[in-house]
Length: 286
Image (tube, helix red, strand yellow):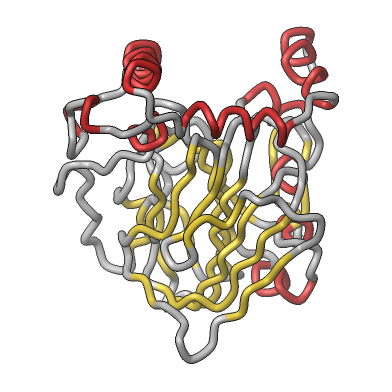
């Protein structure tokens, strides 16, 4: 950890993460026209948000900053790859890491790793199908589209809400906090696909006011003190490739897991790459 990263990271250990996120939630859901328009204009200018892609380009049409932040896109601006056996990108963002899950270990950054078991709530049986498989971690910046979509068609088997801290997930903190993504509060969805089990893990972060899924609605808040799990049987929803599966009310990170010999990433899909929803990032192995 260099000095700059230390100055960014160390104060976060003592910050009241959830209290700050609750305050941010109140601000981002404020429907006062002057307040929400000021925040929207500031975000557009500061982050360079491309409103030309938004289904609704008029900021006055958004009832709150969060409504703007989770805005829909115009049809066709994120075409899905039509290549055979395609795995498509679940979101707009930047690849933090992509690679192999080696003996249960998932690489984070700068020699730091965490286990699939830790990431998925401490249940070894839940994590076992992903041992020696592949993973990717994709970071969504404030300028990005913040809805999350299916990389592959899948039928939901289980959803898990795992309590934790809410450290920032920017590069400095990712480089510095051991096991960051297995420490932050998160929601994991396990799907059955043509490539076997697929896990989509929606990781919370400081100022992320909530995480929601298409089938459940808002999962957090409220936060919890122990792991919660929902099992899906005969009524399990099936979501098609490219279909919306969730969203961050404020931004964060998604982690995708596949099992051993079930999927491979595209050669150009690597750390640092900017990605867009729907583009080819890998292929299932038949």
